[in-house]
Image (cartoon, rainbow, N blue to C red; front, top):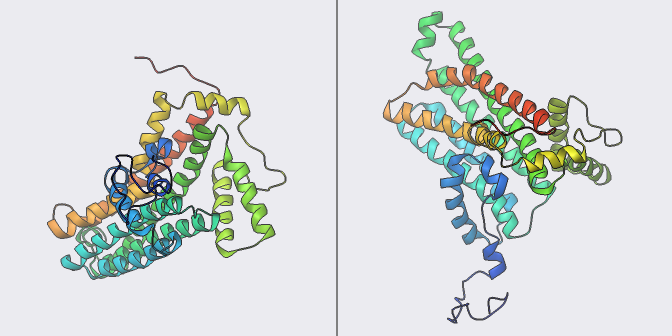
Length: 339
């Protein structure tokens, strides 16, 4: 009973002809362990439950995870175009389309695991789709503010070219810190998942394997993933990655020390910080302000973007600094926080 390919279920009833094989059904799951701890709360409690229902519908179809990923930039571009119009009804549709993009961003990884189709190319395509989503969203917002100049900017600068410059600057900084969040989140997530779940720091060995694989068999998406990995290494390890000379910054004993503290208060706080600070969480906040500002008139969309461009930038810089401090302290071990 309960074995793969059995004609009956555990209870003895005839299996439905449309029922998924047991091994496939049990593989349709969302993030677990530390990955769940790092997830945006909207993803954890809303998008992944919806996404898993979609995965169950897709797992027995020819649709691939990469095809799901490649749909997302098109949805983001359409959303950005609708945002640029400034019409409340179109803004509502824009929010709905971008939310669908966010749900599909949860679908592709789960579908890849369920179909056993995970690959470096798939990861690179997913990363590219995420970045394009941010770009298309902010192009739409910029066009919206260029054609519907915020009154607060006019009052401050007198309108005209000065206002156009102000909106472009604010949107550029806001978009930059959105990308910065995604970039930093991916780097630290990879480090923490490998340390806490595998007992090794794969940020070096994993990147080395990708570089050597691309050298042996160059692919477009493989090169993208290697470039993103190199830039992450340069940003957070302050070294241009070289597969022959670069070495892990953490020793085996330091990794073991960190792994022992994974359920400590500081480690849990790091997970909580990233759940509110990653790229997915940030895009959720942006879409909420659009929904409230344009549909219900509760908040000013321009003020929200100024907030994201100022406090939001300081926030993510602080989160990155805290993570660097956390790694330095936890690699040597630390006493539990006093009650």
